[in-house]
Image (cartoon, rainbow, N blue to C red):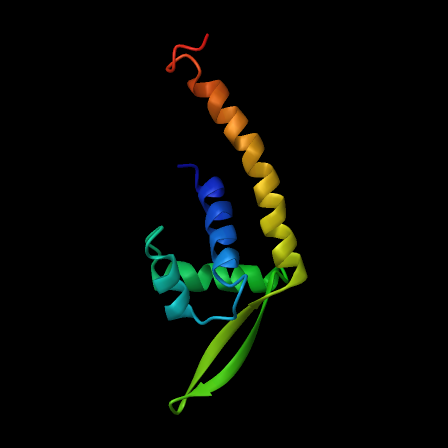
Length: 106
């Protein structure tokens, strides 16, 4: 898969994982596991990028004597998910065009 396309998909997946509830790294990975495998190093790179783009915010909370970072989606992050849904319809149309001969729909 094209690296830029995959990056964009993963970014939206992480945003979707925190859309309804603030969460922390390990929990995000657990929540996404039924759908895709994501390493910690990849996740934290994505989280830093999303924070830099103001698509999420971070707050630290003490948990069992250690600081845990919780991630919260911003209005811009929610807008990015909505943009993705619209873009996805266009991607599906392109996919249908590319695979039309395979389906016998010429």
